[in-house]
Image 1 (cartoon, rainbow, N blue to C red):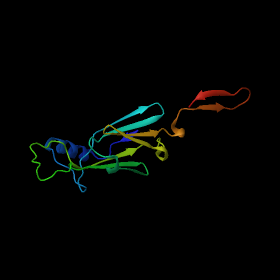
Image 2: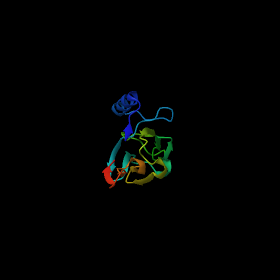
Image 3: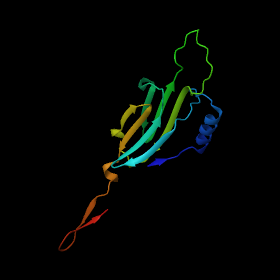
Amino acid sequence: MLMRTDPFREMDRIVQQLSGASGTWSKPSVMPMDAYREGDDYVIAFDLPGVTPEAIDVDVERNMLTVKAERRPAAKNDAVQMELSERPLGAFSRQVMLADTLDTERIQADYEEGVLTLRIPIAERAKPRKISIGGAGDRKQISG
């Protein structure tokens, strides 16, 4: 149901993870995701721990799904001296090419415990159906 579109983007993601680089709006970090089919829905789950729902933007144009988010540092006063900072901050983005068999008009989005979950229904035209064969005498049903 998904199509990977840019192998170099995957390499950038790996380099960013290994280097600990923060994403910017001009070069955002890639967020990890899982994608699977569950019944009549296609589910995509993005890891966005520490991101507020207001800082997440999801849109679809044609069959391109784009998810953007930003995690900002916690507000600190002058008395705070950072000893260790390993949690990635900055901008995160992921683009996923969706198959024509998905109904992008009915996407549902939920955000819970740092995971953004998108449920995309399988389009009716893509579901298996019975086709009636006409002819002289009896009609027969076959799976299509």
